[in-house]
Image 1: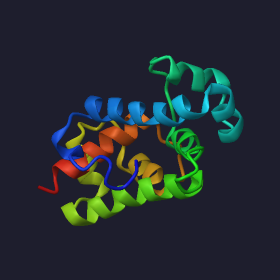
Image 2: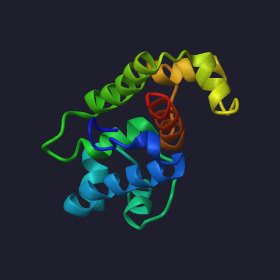
Image 3: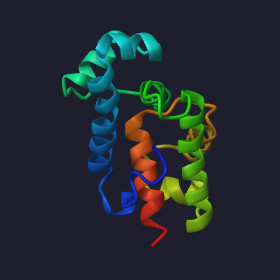
Image 4: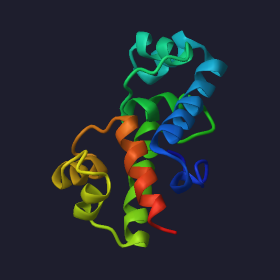
Length: 142
């Protein structure tokens, strides 16, 4: 989700990448505490507590960005989410992929139109969906 932190995304499985994202989300929670992160991020306290407890709740890219933004050394949530989506778009350009090729490559887990809307931020994207798209796009850049 942050540039450079997941340099080998294409060499991982989507599940491994999702686990790495979740570990990254635990860092600001460990540093700031569940209550403070929930308050600062605007993310439901139960969701933040579940993440802190090592559970695997469904998290959207926007929620993840809001949690990461509580780390004072990072940009605001909107910027983090936009950069994450931009990383997918730039990867698509580098790998010369369009949304139809991605749909085919991920065995139609998402429709091409849905992929486009999620990457553009016009439709919510879960962290699991982001991991799937990130891994596939990066794997095609090799």
